[in-house]
Image (cartoon, rainbow, N blue to C red; front, side, top):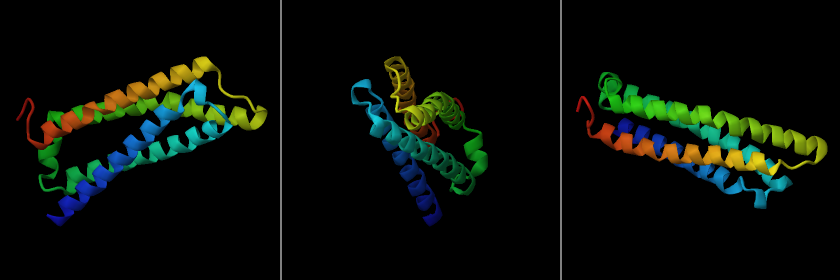
Length: 152
């Protein structure tokens, strides 16, 4: 019982960190706020966002293997596969913004140039799509926890 509670706590903490840093990216990635400090901060925030996403994945996998319901129950649930698919899609979408943040920081350090408005706008759009897709994962999680779904 204690293991289950600690695994859940670790998973929820990682999820909250991921949400906080994705939200920070969305808030910072605006042309009207773009400055050298923001470019540097976006790169750092994105790194922490990526690390928190890895923590979400690892703690989630730990819950499936060492949680009370056991791996057989979890891996047969369609809602788990929906959650993982959404997570992978969000991860793939996040590659674009990550690469841009790195390029922006490199350009800033080499030439002092800030990113063009069109890039900032398109990058923010991707971050916002990630954030909106992320909101669907807890819905699947609630159904998963209650055994609701095609097999539930």
